Length: 475
Ligand code: ADP
Ligand code: MG
Image (cartoon, rainbow, N blue to C red):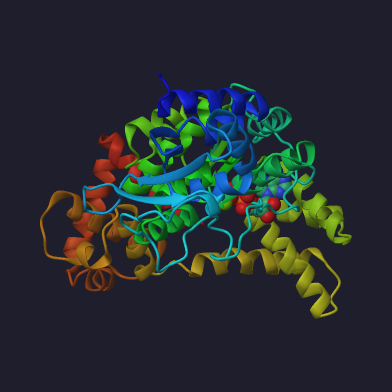
């Protein structure tokens, strides 16, 4: 005889393969397992309910044609949904769903219904229940390459971005990782690549998402037992842009799921674009296997722009806003605000606002007042509370732990760093710093400051902590 579930399905696959895109075939048909053939009904196993719905929505015709060719008019198709379980229970659970040609199928037993209360997560960007498979890119069209001014500080990253958008997935820059400090244009550049790809390849599915939102979606998916749907959603994307991947630090579940999605996309020639506030070598609490993936492609740094670039960024901004400003004032602002581009833009915006609200002419004096205020304003936000928050976030502990009486080395170090920065960035006295950071006395604070000084000149890792936290505090 020789007609088995496998042989029937293999023949169907041959037919299907000739009739759909290779990519779609790989994504939607290769993972299917032929399970059994009884009473002219072929049972196939699919990895999720989402998968099953996708097949029904997009491939039901070709499935029917191919199966009828093999088994005749009475052919039936039964889906078995087999999910890898994401909660404690080790038992995989299955559900059998008869295919669309329901009329010809006797009602099937549903072994274990899953997820029958909450609507499943199909596209995390679409309100559940609404059948919509079109994926919005979540891109901001204002963040274009045109508006991303070139300078020495960003040339490599910008050109790599352009190369990627000309041939998404087709360069060795996969993944492309753009890294650099706060406000230096990572998010802007990431969008620009996406916007340009959408423009050149409208049929490609591009998705921009922050690592934070991705994590949240993943947590929700796990809660609702929809982990597989989540994975499938991300696996069908052609160009995946994830912003601020340092957010994945310490989040092993999210790292794990991202690892699988990344591998799938990479293997299928899809483009991945990532941004981070640090280079892969400096990332903490990111699994080694993920870090090694980050290094497969290109890591390109965005550095602080030099004076000329700052001037041209300002001019471009003014031009787009239709505002005229004397050259010397632009230069004054560019000379005095160098830490990051967002601050630079902020200063010029308040300058424009001040002059138009108060009907004052934009003069160098007004610029001086504003720049000074602007710089002061950003400085004033640094309070001892804020410093403790930043330091404890950095070490992923809470403020209570930082203040506690424990003598555990890493907690003591965090506490000493908080004291050191409180001394450095505020005008508070040693005694006042001590009383605010875990009710210590002034001698303890003094000792802390000395220890930090010593350690940062002798211990490379420790110096790194100081630099990192310093950067966070001077934003
Ligand atoms: P990051 O994500 O690195 O913190 P953003 O991408 O949010 O920084 O950039 C901060 C602001 O600076 C944005 O408004 C962005 O448009 C602007 N910006 C940064 N770099 C440039 C550049 N090279 N040309 C024009 N604008 C820039
Ligand atoms: Mg950003």
